Image 1 (tube, rainbow, N blue to C red):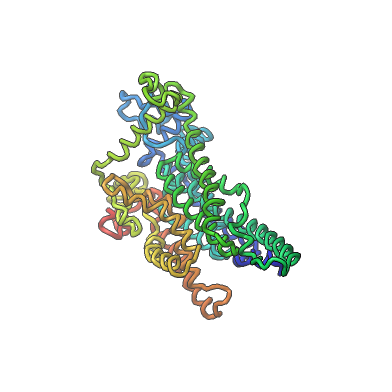
Image 2: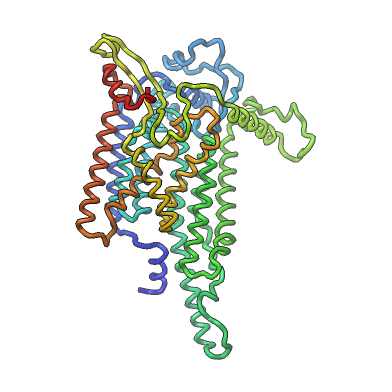
Length: 536
């Protein structure tokens, strides 16, 4: 093995070569999960929960480039929209509190299948939900070095109720989660590629120094060790996958502002990865090299692209002169910073209004929750509920229920509640970078909400970090299975336990399937699925 190959092995660890199996498992699971997500996607043919905002706004974006206000004279705009009159808007712009990207994506499905198609309302989100299953399968293989564990992660995500319900509903939160996880996947690829470059460049530096040392041996008495020659380490180049991550984080933030927290978490994560890489490579001042050569560049790329993509996502607002607050700067001439274009001053004013709205939302709501209860599914959000009686909508008993409830598959979420403590132990005491990477995703998607406990927030926001929930559980299952050096008996018991967990999770998903998809079931059958009093 050459010095470069030895260093590469230390930096990257074991990487399986089973490319075919690494793709087949996730592809099969994604196809299965996609089928379930698209099957009867049009049911119910009515706006569900916050689709009343985002589906109509998606249509408005496609028609006018910005969100128009629904005419107040329409007493039942949802019913009109559903029954074939999508243009329920006047000419006045509407104050909306989320950026445009998610609504552009939802509007694309409406453009493809028609604004009156409930399949079209949800099509784009279902596509992103299905793609996330494939992505987590590939990310799991790269993260754990195992095609089996990648497939298990895909299975757990495909059969999670929270992710499933959001994949079939025209809301924004799964879109945030998709772009944030896409950024994570890009950074995983960048980690491997940058370490390949580091191994090659450090080996070249070492070889050059060794040649100089041999040529001048015994003449100066200086220390010619490689660690002295490689003081800070080499620059790793443009690192294009950092650029991909920055674009994805811009799209996440351009869907909801909560996407910016992933930028902070992932930015710190990649700097820590670079520190570890330079230290392993024998760089003398590894921490300084990682900060100055890697961190500053990564920050400029990721932050710069996130901001650029975010601002670009408002193009429709810039172009349409009648959009909300678009002419604010004209009516309020600048007294300071007069060099700032009026359009940007108007956008800043708009953002101040959005921020004021967000920090002031404290109204009571029956499904308002505290983030402390999210992992254990303390108060799932009811997206839709009707109570058909005998003879209505196929109801064969006295009273039926027809519901869509965003309950995460309990085995997955309750298992993840335990898995997080194992991840913390592995990261803090064993320095396992894989545990740290998963925790970074959870930190970016989950922890910020603890700072807003006084606000009206909902447990369904957790769908933005559900891929990391699946990876957390997969990590623990992988510990149970053991690595290549585990005894056959250990691996057999671990594989059995992992198989049982996945099967039970799929069975649990199947049990809740009727209340994920608005199936008409007897009222007692619905009550049987309300395991906790807080679920009602």
